[in-house]
Image 1: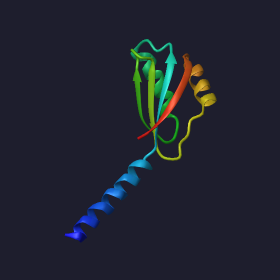
Image 2: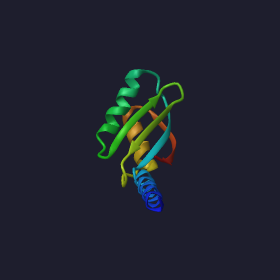
Image 3: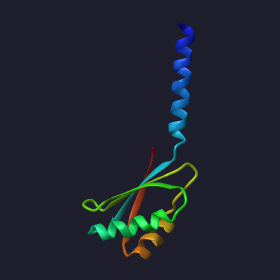
Length: 98
């Protein structure tokens, strides 16, 4: 019984570490997102960046959420340029672990 318990504890620890190392979620506030075509343009920009795993554009809230794999980092100047090039105004971002 003790062996099974230790196996379960070890498995849980390994699973937790893998989840923590799975990357970062960026939540960005953007002005000017008004239609599905806007969302498509933003998605195209992010799909060109290596390590981007998932992109979600919430037009109603003006929020773009991007999940990236471990080791990929975005900077505010990088995002300002990306959104300006796409025709939108970047307002800021926060990060969350996934």
